[in-house]
Picture 1 (cartoon, rainbow, N blue to C red):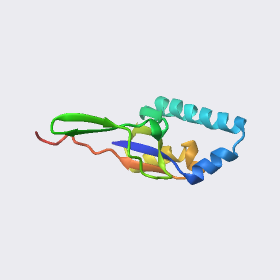
Picture 2: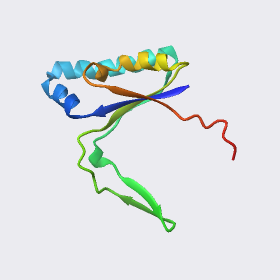
Picture 3: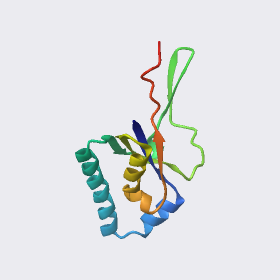
Picture 4: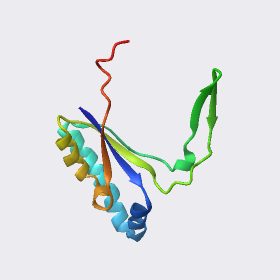
Length: 123
């Protein structure tokens, strides 16, 4: 079963980040890379990425057959998706154990969400 581990940037995580020294920030980044390697070696890693600042996001919609790409409006939110791990493991408990190893989990929560399995859907 596939699970998405979602890492949010929020007031609490930003406060922790701001309080970190440069060395602590470097260690934090290396800890993510180490976790990537550990997940890959265990055969559970499908993908893992950090995401760019939300100001670089674009919204895409289709109206009347025309594709519209826009850069706003942006809601005034204090939380945004900062990154993710997509893993494939047998049980929710396994996914929770991997999520507990995400460096961000030590400072704030990370979300674990099952990926919807559409393999049995008929078309």
